[in-house]
Length: 300
Image 1 (cartoon, rainbow, N blue to C red):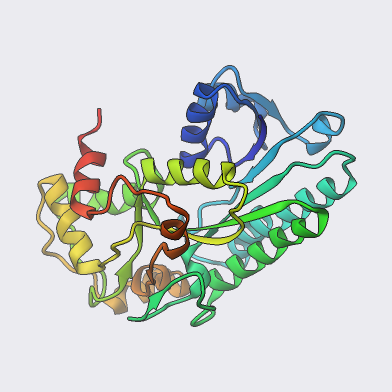
Image 2: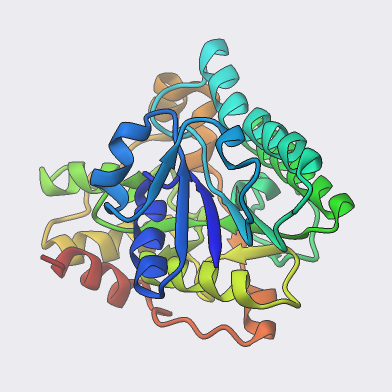
């Protein structure tokens, strides 16, 4: 299978490259820095800087995971434009390019996040639910998904991946959360009652491969473990995995003052459940957050 991957140099993309290379697939990674792809993704991965480099080549699947990190810095006007361009505008370019191809891939798997729902409060959220509240993160995910869904008009199967907090020590939000704990300064965020949907990196990679190869899979899937936990429980388990206390809370007022609207990512949450993945027969390896965190931080 020839797979085109955007976001291939990211935390998830690099793991996907390892898996698919081991399965004998042919991989092409679209990157703004093609020279870095071989070192990050493997020497066998082809790097391109423009989609037009593949105009005349057969393509079986597109996996669209590109996007600037959403929680790296406050959402200034300039940062919002970058987040929008790296997700929605890039996906629009991808759709335009696919529309002009004579041969089109069978499937487009496109990234999204559980933030699509907005702050869900205490209610359980499956893929049958619509957005609960709309903030910038929700609007971004909604536009990202709506753009990707247009590929179905081209006869392409579309899968939308609403990902929760990915548990990996190699990067992402967990690595940033772990730093204050390692310094003995960790604790709950705000009240700690907000729900945190999470998923172990191994399960994230496995479910992407599962959905890519399952011809009946289409539409949105909550990519998170079956048992979300509240923030106060998560930080307790994180502290245990790192052998550090979790006693120093960050007040809501301080988070809102320092991060502005972006604080909603930490103070709000989604009690998201992977109903459609379970119905499709996907089996999670990590269902317990403590077991997942212990595994992540015990890896060499």
